[in-house]
Amino acid sequence: MSQTKKDATHTPDEIQLVTFRIGEEEFGVDILVVQEIIRLLQITLVPRAPVFIEGVINLRGKVIPVINMRTRFNKPPVEHDDSTRIIVVHLGQKIIGFLVDAVSEVLRIPATTIEPPPPVVAGIGSEYIKGVGKLKDRLLILLDMDSLLSEVAQSL
Image (cartoon, rainbow, N blue to C red; front, side, top):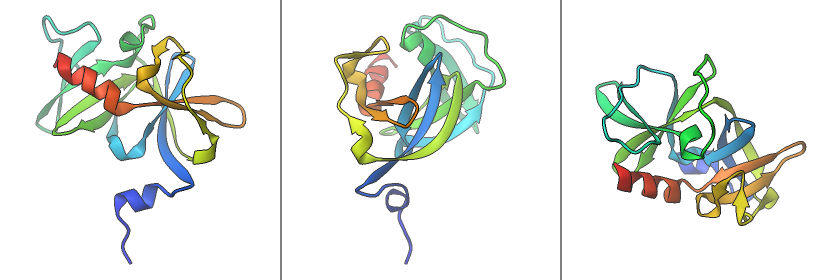
């Protein structure tokens, strides 16, 4: 019996996330919205783009806008290094890249460990947060990609 991607990554009791770092904070996004994770490519600046748009990349012949998550979440800029990654996600028919400091891991967490978001977490408005996952030794901020991507799409 074959499984769909959704069946293979989620059960009613747990969800699967791609986790990444921006500064000292750790975030998670539903693996179902992630197309791929790539190393940093040459980013071409786009004149007059919103400040959080780092530029565009050419990924296998497709021009993809790249959002700098540090800038988007009002974090100070840092030099890119070997850990810097671009998480490529789908927004309807659009593909968008998110520049992050590092991708941590792919993680399955029990749905029961996720709590609703507090009004403000790590300087990010609660409208972008789906919940907070309580793990043994850390908290994981789960981003609501629909809200975040909808706002980004309006800027593109």
